[in-house]
Image (cartoon, rainbow, N blue to C red; front, side):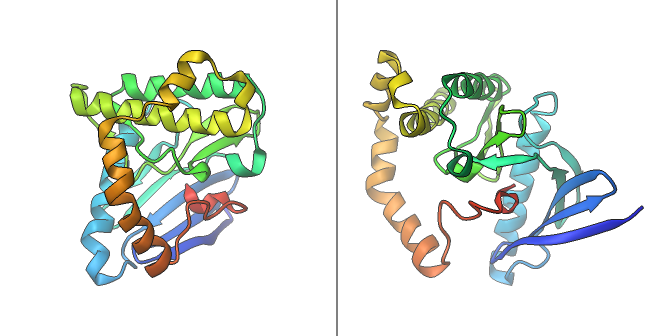
Length: 218
């Protein structure tokens, strides 16, 4: 069977490849090439992602784990375009995306990175999908911290709806957008500026990285 591999992304945390074997496409995250200083963090993030995806095995619209070992994670590829490329204008897309998000939350998973548009896809059939679960949390008991994180997931998805479908926001959705949680306000005022400085100035990353080759964000 013919195989091919394409490097999608390389940074301090390793490499991401799209691997095609026959009719099957997979995404390979390889942490063995991470900078030595970042190796332990890269492997920890990879295991965190695998744990979240394992809890979502029965959910469509998210990647699924094909193989995990010490340095690599192989997971399914989702065919589609990132939100900022497809620019969905249909209210039904966002209704379906919110239902998908509720399925994540019922499974005890918060995504924690839906603010980035490349992490929200429009699949070839027009349905939504979420990718890049490195920062996702698995909290099966769904306590207070889970509820705070889940609310932020919802608020970030509503921000995208406000960008592409503003006239379809409900009164309740506007109220959620207008009332970020206290931890979110603290994060925005303290942690986010440091994060942006480190990732954009020092590492040269961008929130919309991979906009036209969104496989780099899978």
